[in-house]
Image (cartoon, rainbow, N blue to C red; front, top):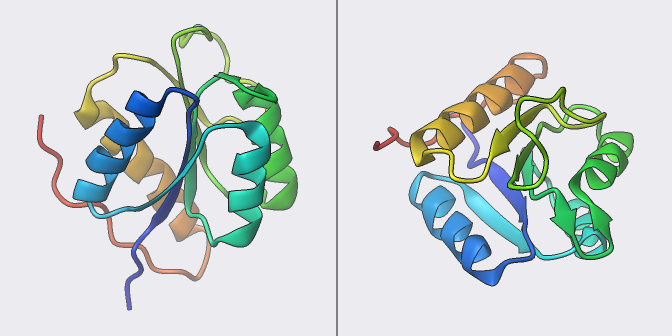
Length: 136
């Protein structure tokens, strides 16, 4: 039995949130949106989330602090940070599995996300079906 992966997207820009909802929804993810650290924590504790995508700069804190808090709640959840303000060539902050620069291709975002989820799924008993095939 496979599951539909639930993705929490945390982004303060409404246009980017809408983009994430369309992109990831079209590729087989159930998408939950949050615009701040507090809203993200509330959503995370109220849902079964397979992965988190977060911006670095957020109302009420930053993506690194959020990632650390999320890992305290569930150490297995993959966290991908997409940011224009955190250098993607730096080591990811504690709690963040992957950092990508804003403007990265849709294909790379989806591939990295799928890899993170597949890695976590192989470490657990849950089955995961990757998102639909990735368009360029």
